[in-house]
Length: 383
Image (cartoon, rainbow, N blue to C red; front, side):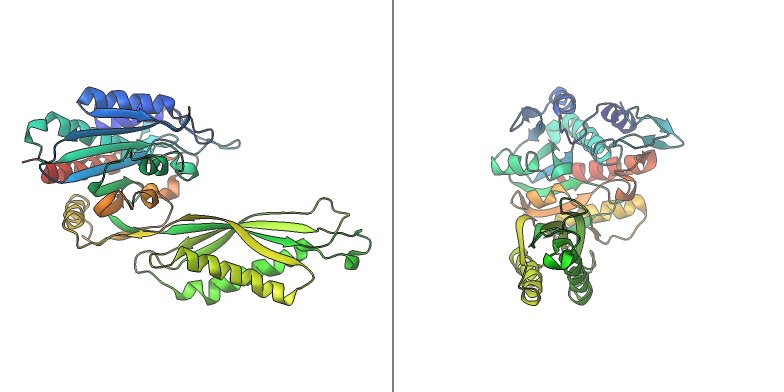
């Protein structure tokens, strides 16, 4: 089957996360790779987050890893699709479906390249590793991170992480610090709110402090490919009833980091915002905790393998042979200890149509991804 037909088959295998059950799609990938001649492992830390790691080749040359995740976001209770999200419908040069761009399009291209390379195993002078990873959509803890922490992923000279870059080569990816701000106040009857200390009202002031932190601090930091770091207040919870002064309120924030920012320094900056508000309001308690950290990464565009992929991408897509940045999250954060020389994020389409009704990949973009990765693998691994 060609790469477009393969993508259609992958879309027809639901793998929404949550709940994160990737058994069926992992079975498909494992069978595909095993049939192509790969040594294949189908592994998971539980009975849901199944991933596949497959290898072929020898130690006579470089080792290349092609990585894509096999889970998708959930369909959503109110999602209104014009196309059946699990049909893989081909219409007007587009393949529609949940995960059709994020991330089953890179997956299809990588599986197709894997099959092509396996046919030429007698010419191989290196090793190709294919990773079909679960759990990326909720952070990768049970997927790529677990695989790396438990030595299921071999060290490789170069790693390509499949995501949506419009077939440009991304050498930088933002990291993230997630955190929870909490305010403790004092309850009172709503008839006399002045008798209490309203934590929700105080949180409004702290949120304005975070807006100033964005404007006065973060917007002054710039990365040439990724722009400025950012902070977003994603959720807020507080109070028990409209007729009671709220004695507790919390917000959860997402702080995106650019390469060069130290996660510990970022944690200290967030703590300083809480401490400054505490100093102005000693009648309440302010804290920030529950930190979750995913590091940023940046690779050198001067690495020979990166430069080679840049040149191939530029020739196929008629775009400049210059690196770009990738703004959303990816499993690259879990692979920094696996890539010996270089790592990039690369794939078809745009993340702007991912996680949305009528998600799609154009066949032209998908075929370009396949062509670029095939040429890169052949030039790198075949003699």
